[in-house]
Image (cartoon, rainbow, N blue to C red; front, side, top):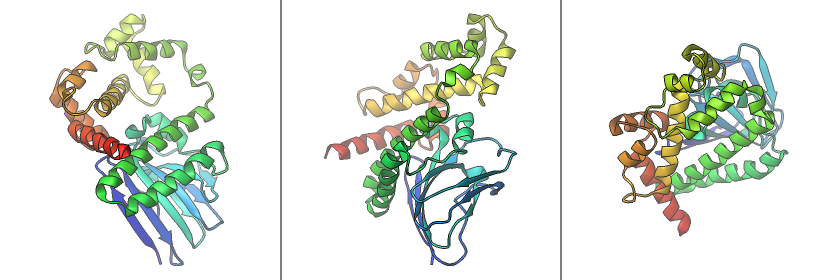
Length: 293
């Protein structure tokens, strides 16, 4: 028998728990066709954790890839090109579905992180695997409001896990980048609040052509505009979480980080995180109140 428990939250995060019995196993939750050349193998019964990234890589990796998992391992995958499972008849799958942007991942990041699972026996796996498993169980049994708080905790843990895992795979990511790109990224960070920040102003400040600037960002799996937008949205999201209703208006937060139009800000925020800025702020405030209880 196969049992599925699903928890959906306004954060745009879903938590699914599958108990797989003896009948044929279903695929991982996906939003497109499975990637036939990407396989996940396991030979031991137990619990396996998966993180399905929405809005991740644009295309599957062309080369075949087989990853071998053991119980408690945490494996990221792209929901548009989900891997095929080669698992025992009985196992438990705990799946977190979340927008890649919500975890702070670019398209290039998502493409890299799906190629290396986090082993249960590793330092990160030992710490986070049981916590994520417990969060999923608790969210399935909790009231909706408590489920939102638990989902937010899961997002924080997964974001930390993603950053650490990418850092572990690339000890010095800046060394692989052209020095000019490192300077450009620093410049962008310093000028995020400037509404006039654009490819033209960036290229002019670094004495390069706009065409070359676009090539540098393309090599990173993104574009100049998407990078600036993602960083501005990240900062707005943090500000809305830190400052509750009444302390600073949404329009003021948007203006502080270079958005000229509150309407445009609300539209791109919803597209990135699956909810409006006010919904995000209220959800974060409820989670904070419950943590204080």
